[in-house]
Length: 128
Ligand code: THU
Image (cartoon, rainbow, N blue to C red; front, side, top):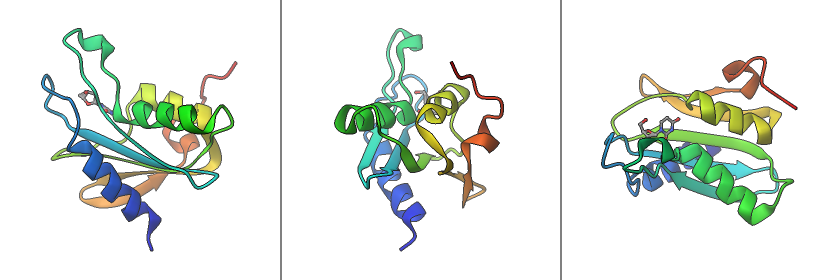
């Protein structure tokens, strides 16, 4: 199997359940944890726009709630219906908190699955 395309399929499915009445961007994220857990999340918008949560953070927070603070991301896929983009800056920072050096972050670029590491997506990450 290609686990990236399986994650992308799951991310596409959860994107259909996004709550995005303001931007109409329906985004889905699916991730595999280092212990084999599978989690997903969609974006959930709010009339007070800044309260919106992205699909990636929704999925990651769900994974932490289930697996606890040791949760680490082995692989993550993000996709939007009828749009293409890599994770936003805020989500890159949150991904970096739970990523390993070889964590694969998958997204679509001109219709093709591409993978980047967190070091590629967010050089000079903020760390305490
Ligand atoms: N969004 C995500 O869910 N993930 C991203 O990485 C970028 C943006 C959502 C937030 C908002 O609901 C909509 O897409 C438009 O910004």
